[in-house]
Length: 85
Image (cartoon, rainbow, N blue to C red):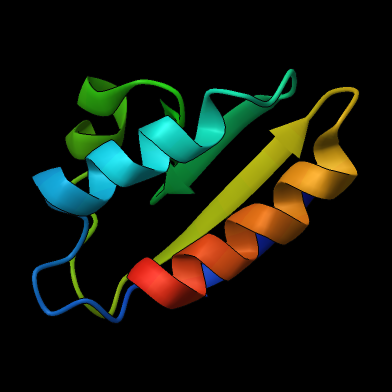
């Protein structure tokens, strides 16, 4: 499993638009993608699960990838978070 921590910089946090983009980004990966915030884990491939974390500006989340393409997934997702969140 690979992971990184990211502090949300978007003033609105993870709201509908970036959550939708994130879910679309995670779909092609064979690996399981998880987001962890305050001990609560969300499925990175599920819009409701991502939104359910309620990640707000200034909060830190951990993004995890576990599976056959985890190395590629974690690098690309970290770049996605820096560009969009």
